[in-house]
Length: 304
Image (tube, rainbow, N blue to C red; front, side, top):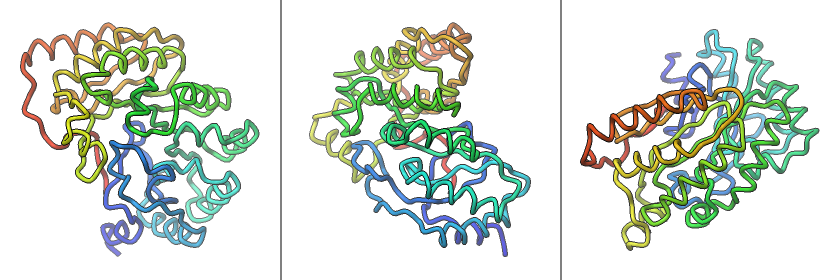
């Protein structure tokens, strides 16, 4: 069977986001859509949430075994698989090893409330079973911005979730969305997000460009004038302000913004490379006194 045929049989989502730190992972669908499914900016809000049965996951794992090659790491697909019951996830780990015995590490997406729904003992059990990395969609450290987009979480929950993962020895990777507060909340969005970053020790920070998807509440908000959408240059100015305010300590994390000016990916280290990142931002702002033409979407890599 051709690899393309295997992929078509294995994945129900036509496309999905690959975090920058998962470039060497294989991907296994365990859920479809998001259990929350209400964030105003999210394209997956249109998807019906479902969890695959162990039988379905077994079939997908068998298909994955045909194309995984020498990869030893699996990233579970679904917008927030960590919200699934711990016993179910442990069964999935065991099941995948039956068909993919070389796999020793697992990663997945989570909401902060998914992390907080797990006890210390549950997180420890998942860690022992091979869960090494969790990607948490923080998006903003400002409660006002989170409420505007119906995120269903608070900045304090975000902080508590990151610290819980850190305590469990599970690497926490976070995503942020420049421009999520619009012009009216831009300063607050930058300041509160920098404040949150300064209290945690993420393994990586991924800034995702604010894409406006048709059929989402955000698109309706922009159309009605209740959300003052920023252009690419304004978002870069906001990003520079946010990074300038960070006071992170401890080991470096990888900082990636894959949507700078809708044209570039900028990568560096925080905290040690803070000055270098600010220098790059200043160079780009000087080179583009006017924002490049808007495009619908020119953000992170999509695999499907």
